[in-house]
Image (cartoon, rainbow, N blue to C red; front, side, top):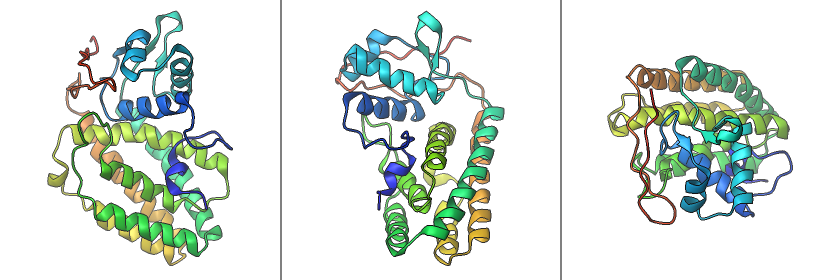
Length: 260
């Protein structure tokens, strides 16, 4: 069975794992965008990106075009690319679409999942709960917890029979991650009152018990709580404090804030 992590990589149906420079660049840029290395509205100069990610024109253009198709960057004609703005309305639209599509995918997974699928869910949950939530390593936009969280949600949907459904869920997942991780730019993860481990366990237990209605309801509720936490962060004034950016070549590059 295909590993769960690939299920939320927003691949086109039939795409292989990252084997090309363009694919690797796309994923690095995507993780930096969802990890708030660039503030909303900031321009992304093509030359500076090529130097920072140490890639040529063609793979970078391909990566940016793909990110633009997923609305993780905005293309401005001949003026290059820019980081999209954020808003509560957009965030809730993303959450509602995730609720709709992921409930459907989870029900389908329960109908088609086998013992290997069940084992992957249990293993992904175990890995997630054994990893404390914390900051990412220097130069890395994602923490180990973020990766294991993505793997767990991917494992739940891992037996879904529709590659198109998983493709669109992957796009929405990374869009919502941009908002979810905004919350953690402004608060200590360990200080948050929400018991996410319990929410994940309840979803897992209902899934493994083959209770599609209950599992779907728990997943929808879980995503709603994620939206509520992100909405609280969006009430703060912008521009968002931008984390120190460390390009892949190790040099120091200044990150500008969006003009208001």
